Image 1: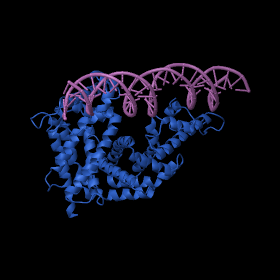
Image 2 (image 1 turned 60 degrees about the vertical axis):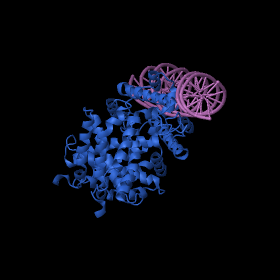
Image 3 (image 1 turned 90 degrees about the vertical axis):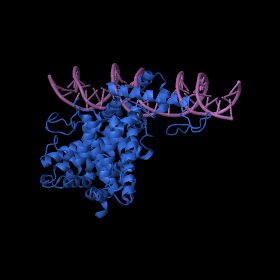
Length: 227
Length: 227
DNA sequence: GAGGTTAGAGTCAGTCGCTGACACTTGACA
DNA sequence: TGTCAAGTGTCAGCGACTGACTCTAACCTC
């Protein structure tokens, strides 16, 4: 089956016209969410490498095969929430006022999406679990690796949005990619610094983000001594 | 055994005092180099994921266990050369004149180490094979992920060197990390652009590196329209 | 409401990356 | 020359993941 975003059957069953997802669909989603919660809970308590897929499926009481039908791999579960957040960020960036410069828009979008992160997430897993997951990713080498790759895939996407906003050609003008690369570099340091600290709150990472972005300009000045 | 960098036995056997590595050591090194060459050759011809460890050891005619005694994993073989290059870069950075600013020093070091890359490498594998390996890493998702993680580990190290050079405190001043993050971001875009092109030469990547670094300043200007 | 269709889940067997334990061979050194 | 141990081989086993097949129950049609 070509599963659509939400798998909604539109205007089919019954006389009501548009209905919600059917029982089958709901059951499927419930299984997926249960697997996800169980996985993240296990990862954050006993560690990612120390958690086997068998343990996850045992906690939800489904077969291993079912796990691999919902997720391409063990890793994918760790980034399921991350994916939602990133989607939100890109949308926020597209909606920034057109008169903002590239860096101002990026800054606005990232801070804005931190503010709104709670709502989208809580529907699937507790926000606190998501935050612990983020920290776990930062401190687990194999996940950190995937995290980095995902972030450069994001960079390409974001560079496209910036190029569009600024009306420049991505193929010939290196500035969108360079600006986004520098910005993302700072974002990554931010995440790492936050993960290394004790304060796991959303407010904390928001504050760190702001501080580090403020330093981007000065850091690139040629001589740091005469600031 | 605690294998040292080169495993040289100093001032032991015979009357000559300082001698080269013994027969055992040489044999070991030969096995390792053979495994490395075979692995990279297979990776670059039939693809990383499509190459099994069994195929590599078969090509060299040793047991699988031997492979895993020389390399922590299949991935490690893909980055063995990379490691040499990075070592060289850090050394080059430390040796930059003290009056250069942070970005100038980074730029000088990276361009300088591209120039010198050939010699260190050719001793183990043909430079052309190394270049193809680099391209393969860029185009293989799982390797790209590891590559990214390695590069942020490098960032931390480089930030330390920069902080030292500039006489600032890494613990309280975010500028070293921010500058290095921005610089590394650009370096990564550079590698990706090079990998996507057709020209696999060292000259090519050197030229791209220079071009992109030139754009770092302008790209961070607030308004691109009035440059 | 009966009956055919099919998506989702289970079972099983097998591949690949990787590790621990143990035995063997052969350089290294006294 | 004999002892020691580094480097290798063999074997058994774990964990992630896949393909092929079967079964169940939600579904859609009539």
